[in-house]
Length: 276
Ligand SMILES: [Zn+2]
Image (cartoon, rainbow, N blue to C red; front, top):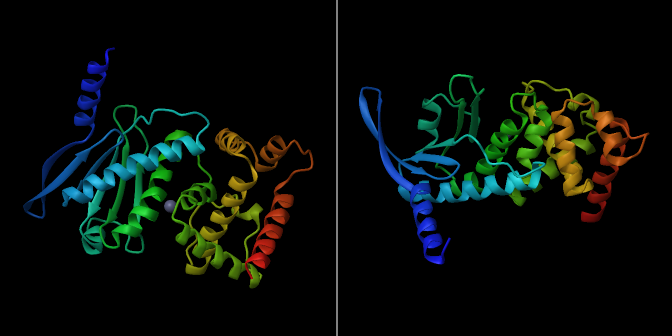
């Protein structure tokens, strides 16, 4: 392919993948017009073209980074993700999204007869925070969901990995909360955390669940090298028990969740001493 045709090809590609159009929806007896930006992996739908374009660009970058950082091999992301940006918290909640959430990933399994639903929703208030924290968090859920392909993703890992791509400020806050839990002697054992199937109901338990999931996931990312972490995800996907996975990854026949718990706790206490 000559240089000129490469150039035309790129122009054509950019045009197709960044097309912008408007769509109308009939809601509550009236038509609502929305702006849509179509890109390689996303359709971003909102009311402000500039915001939609910005979200589209950032989202595509996040997706490529998350896939290449965590998945065993780079795979083309097969299904488009719809990102709905609501104007404010009220319209976000009125559309049926939970009041307590800043953003949400809604997934309906891929059906044999048609595509499943892959929708990320959030609202425009505090947009900067949404772009730094909510967007990469929810995209990580999408990526894991596609990668596990219908197999069960352990809840701690799903939330832990999603939090590990949030901004430094957000992760630092979680680190501090985790340290407070440890000081109070309140922390879920890893053996219990690894089998949690449903989100806890009480506020403090939810906070502990999220902070500990984040903390142990960060510990694993930092202590396994990048390739070993990818291998870890692949073994979890295969449904192997954690003790078996830890033995396989460390070549230590005595490796266990109990030992991981001790090493993790020690590292948190050491880290806390250093920052004092
Ligand atoms: Zn989440």
